[in-house]
Length: 327
Length: 262
Image (cartoon, rainbow over all chains, first blue to last red; front, side, top):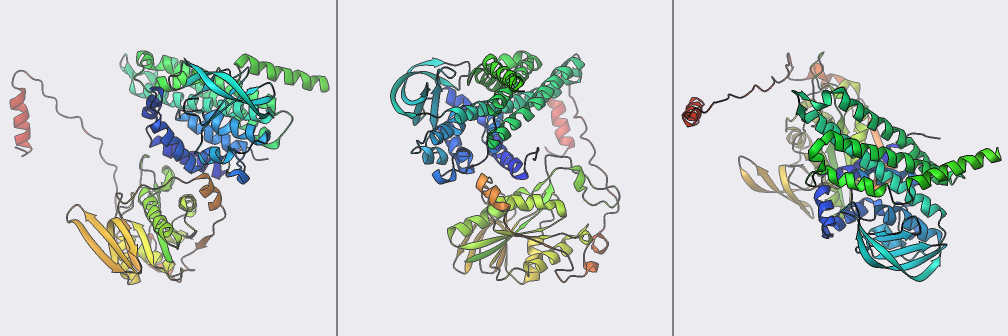
C-alpha cells in the first residue's frame, strides 16, 4: 500500500490552491456572511469546473468517481481558503447518501455544480447550513431521508454560516446512512485541518513581521514553542485524516472508528491553531477587520458539527473495546 | 485541423531566490522551486483555445533537464495532447542560438506543423529572442509580442503590442511562429479530469543525437557568450532621512535638483 499522496493528487491540490489564492476568498467569505451570495456561488462554479463537486459522484451519474483520498485532499484545500457554503454537505455527504439510498435524480446536478445541497442529520447536525442557497434540502431522521423546509434562521459563531432549524417534510426514501455519515465526518475533518494549517501560516507570517521590545516576536522562544506545538499537532492529525480516507476506500470494518479518530485529531489541532493564532496576533486578531477572524470562527463552528468531540471519542473508545473483546 | 506546437520552459519560481551556480555561472536549478513559466501557461491556453474553436492537436515541446517533466505534465493537464521532451546532459549551459537550433530540430520531428506558439520571453533567461531565431531557422514568418491571436483558415492575424511601438496589426500565412505576452489571456487551472488524463498522454524523450545534431553545436563550451564573473545584487541601501526644522521643503527641493529631477 502506498502511504504518500500520488503526484496527481498533489497536482490537483495545487490547482485548487492556485485558483483560490487568486480569487480573494476573504472578500467572498465576507460577502457571503452579509447575505450576498453571488461571488461565492461564482467561486463554486469555478471549483465545479475543476471537478471538485463531482469527486464523490460516480461516473455513471456525471461525476468523477474519485477516491475518498482525492476528496480529502480537495476539501482540505477548501478549508484552507475558508470557502463558504455547505462544503461538507453538498460535496461529500449528500452525494454518497443519495447514491447509497438509490435516489439518484439529483446526482448529475450536484456533480456539475448546477445544484448545491444541504443536509441536516438528527441528532448530530440539528441545523442545516446555508439552506437559503441550497437547491436540495434533505434531512436524515432515523433511517429515512426527508425533505425539509427551513424554519427560523439562527446565527452561527461563523458569520459565513447561516443556520436554519428544520421543519421536517415528506419522506423521500429510506436512507442508507453508514458511508454517507463517514464521508461527512471525513470532509468536516479535512476542512478543519486545512483551516488549521492556514491559521498556522498566518501566525508564522505575523510573527516574522511584528516587532516588540526591539525584536521580531517570532524570535522569542515563547512564540516559537506555541507555533511548534501547533505544527506538530496538525502534522500528527494529517495521517489520521488520510488513513481514514484510505479506510473508506478499502471499505474496511474500522471505517467508523477511523473517521471519528481523524475528526477528533483534526478538530483538536485546528482549534489549537486557532487559539494560538489569536495569542500570536494579539489585539489585531480580535478585530473582525482582520482576515484571521474568518478562519477563527469557521474552526469554532466546524468543531461542533457532524458530531461533538466527546461523541467521536466515545466512538473510538467503543470500537477499541469491541476489538479487545473479540481478541 | 490546426497542428500546434507550444514551447514550454521550466524556470525557477519567481517567488523564490534565484542564484547562479558558483562553478560555471549557469542557473542553479537545485536552489529554487521549479515551475512551468507563467508565460508558457498562457501560450498553452492560447493553443487550446485555437484547438477548441476548430479542430487541432497541441504538442508541447520542452528542452530541459529530467525534472522538467513536471512542467510538461502541467501543460498536458491543462489539455495539450502530447509532448516532446529534449533532455541531454550535453545541453547544459546552451545559449539561445543553440537552444533555438535544438528546438527547430525537434519541431522538425512533428509532421505538418501549422503554428508554433511561444512565450515572448522566459522569466529566468529573459533574452526574448528565441521565437525570432526559431522563425529564421524554420523559414517561417514571425509574429511576436502578440496580445491577440486569431486563426482564419490558412491565415493568422496578430495584434502585436510593445512599449515602444504601440499596437501593430500583423498578418501572415500559416505555418508561422507566434510569441505571446502576458496580456493574451488568463490560463485555465488543470481540472481533476485533465490531471488524470495527462498520465496517459504520450511524452517522447529525445537526445541531441536523436535530433541529428552534433554535441559540438550545443552546451556551455560552445556558447557564443561566456559569463566570467557574477555577483549578487547589492542590498538596497537605506534612504536619506530629512529632519524638518522648518526648511524641509528646501531640503527636498535641493535633493531633487541634485538628482537633476527639477
